[in-house]
Image 1: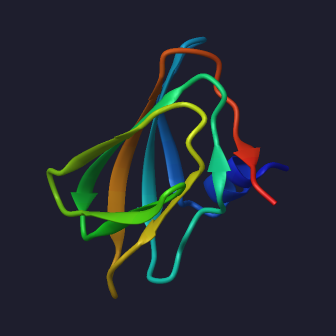
Image 2 (image 1 turned 60 degrees about the horizontal axis):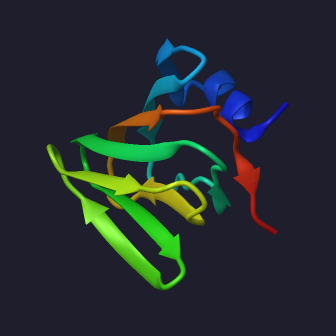
Length: 108
């Protein structure tokens, strides 16, 4: 079971749309929740914060972008990143991924 599948099983994700080239997923993160470092070979990640605050961390150069409700961030293919909840409450965001084949390449 991959990480995305594990999160879905734990009720942290809900796939809104998935085609061969586009994927839209809603993430619900509890305090302390954070995805592992990873990148995508083809798809661009577009983060849309819906509730709370989320941090999107980029590894090179190291930086953190904090998003609040209504704010967005685009992470291009090949960029090592991770996202996580930046509040003491629940945070939610919509992740739009495309155009291209989806993969989740976990970093060591």
